[in-house]
Image (cartoon, rainbow, N blue to C red; front, side, top):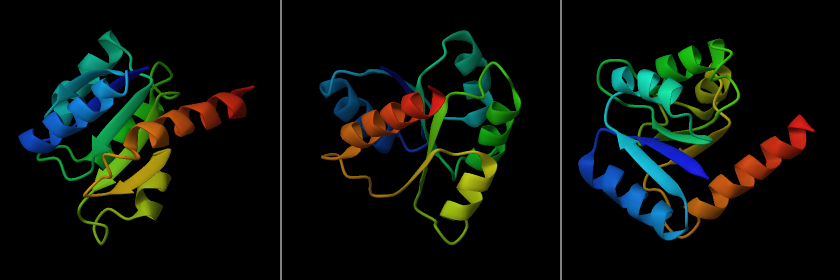
Length: 126
């Protein structure tokens, strides 16, 4: 499975990449939403692990763009945040996110949570 991690904190971007690669996933990382849209269209991931608190365009704005575009609407997006008071589960789901995680993310359960999300989505599409 191909996963794109969009995270502006270098240590968190690296940690997510290492954990997911160790679990057998193909992982790319980007640190800004503005760069992500073109990358997603060029090399479509199955899952996007998306930090909501990105500088410039935040995660909510990016997921709305992705879900409005027929080419990217079916990509699973998991919101990640340290600020649930600003980026609530309800706001993430309303914007189009398929999952929601609070930081710090559990490195033990992250790979399975993403696999389960894709499995659920695949069953829902059948």
